[in-house]
Length: 425
Image (cartoon, rainbow, N blue to C red; front, top):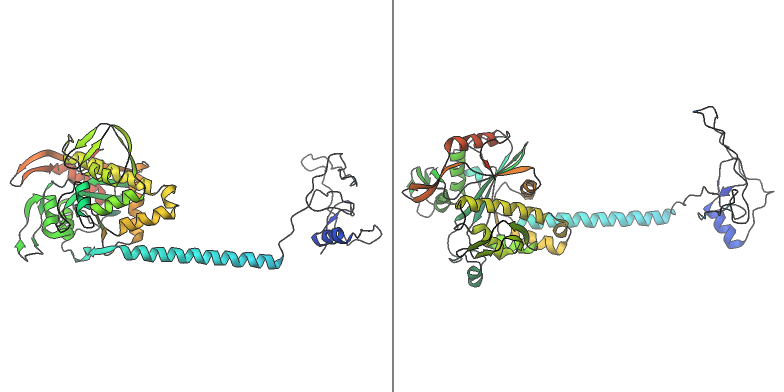
């Protein structure tokens, strides 16, 4: 179908089919042939906004130049004499071609959707949901926001004898797991707050029954990590809820092997140190300055505490700092957009991660984003307020919380209010 130009010159026209025919057959448009009816646009009103009347278009010339003497810009559409009209537009794709493009897009979208569903199902099946928070009795009511308990255990499952030696973990794969770090992460209306709970915190462990013996024990004072040794994740959650008044919504735990695997899968984590760090027990040996920590070096860094001036508090600061940096690195385009990196990372993390029965991939994604937010300035990293780092107890030296400040901190978090208590790291 011929597409005629509207304008004062009826001889100016365009048309994909006519052009092709004109070029291939050599047929010439004859001025005597009547053109179709042209609806001519009225000239602009010179009185509107002071606009001057537009001069009529100069007639086209047949020497490849426009009426103003400038070379014509070829748009692929020519007038009857071969001159450029200046108003050409790209012809629409033929219907058959459009159908092919549409079918290709549908197929591509389907493949991507199926790939995403397959990845989700695969990742979801990797989760080890062995903790049932719904079975825990005497729990505090749920407050505002969401609370995650992040536990780093000293489980050596998945580590060979050689790996345990290289990582300075000691023990064997058959040893029971104990808590090496505990972080209470709250996310809500005021961003993310990460609160480290020192494993030597002097707390009240609620009454419980030892799983291995079936013997009942009354509530008593002890170090926080003893709760995990006595009753695993269930008793640890009960103990933290009892001493903080906060309801734990989700539980996540990872052992040594999983931690090392994730760090190595993302290609190491950048970390800058303000001093030299050397600790024989953990194997840490780092100079002042910036480094990219691999799995072995990172594990030594987050475990060392004997040369920290604040002991366990200093170690918890390093752990929070590293976790935030790890989340940031895992979210970088180099990791997320590279299948050869992102799949090993997910496999290394999900394969050794222990979560509660109500935790799924969306919850883990929210946890990941919350940790990353801390490095972006939308959050705080705190230690629980303490009054003594060397509190003398029948169980040895312990960390004693500052009861008044700690209670204020946990009340603010539980009510999802801005945090004012606690020492900012």
